[in-house]
Length: 428
Image (cartoon, rainbow, N blue to C red; front, top):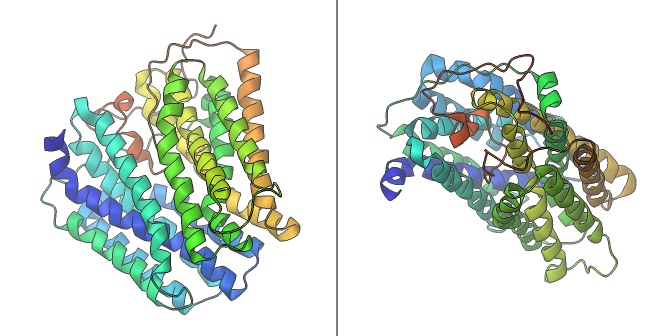
């Protein structure tokens, strides 16, 4: 495995630098927006623009990369991303930030697509699962590390925006200096959401609702932290401890889902996450940076909620023929992305109307709905508990990352379009 990872070290280093900058930027904008007096609804809409850009960039990136090549595309997107980051400090207004967040999302999804397609083509078939696990670990650790950079300099100044831009530019150095052969991007699989819903309703609706909840987290958790009185160190701690929880608990939860009906696991995990979110509102939870109970609740929330989308993905792939896994995975990613785009906006409206306490309530409502869907489907129809697809720790990134999963085959395989009617495995 070491021999496999060594040639990809440059790409993984680029991922780490990119995610550190991206993680810092999201938290920085929430804190800086609070300083500038933006209300929660405004900040929610600003943060939603990023996910809209991410969604649009998913379709724009493959064409540009195929036209100009991976290295030049990476340089193009790095320049675009660094420029938009620096412009945040020059044009400090909600409308400007929303436009800039949209272009930041477009740029970042392009960068992720370049890196993930390169990783995919370099991954030996027998070690794809291990490489995917390493890639996800780098993602989560870099996001957590990026939170702590916010305390290096005052948030009211230009310096932290410059630091984000520097990290993004540095991410391009190991990638553009690589001598690896540039891969070919396969055509984007055709979406068939109605067929997807017929195969696995719990997975499709669960992914959508998980996107709503996690979009609210990525967009407004840092705002919530400032509203409850945490200083910059406390904000960094809350964000990073939630991400670390997501990294620590996904694997054991996933192993549990492999041993039984995934819908039961999904319903239980969603209910526990909802209960954890509501526990954040208890008067006995002090709102001070040194409080271990507060951070413990967010650790548990991250561990539970980060596992929802991977369980949905595994449940979906369990009930599809191998030739449809890549197309179906891309479709599920789309649904999760739509939820992520609406999540910050809806949560921001709720926080403006009802106060910062509305964010945990928003989490709880969306997660209870997901639990009801999963539990209801479990009661209505029993399915095999023999899972041909193993659970994989994952984040919502790009369709190219799904190709790294062993179940989807190698990048050299012909891309299969998802038909209007998927031949699902027999129900019982």
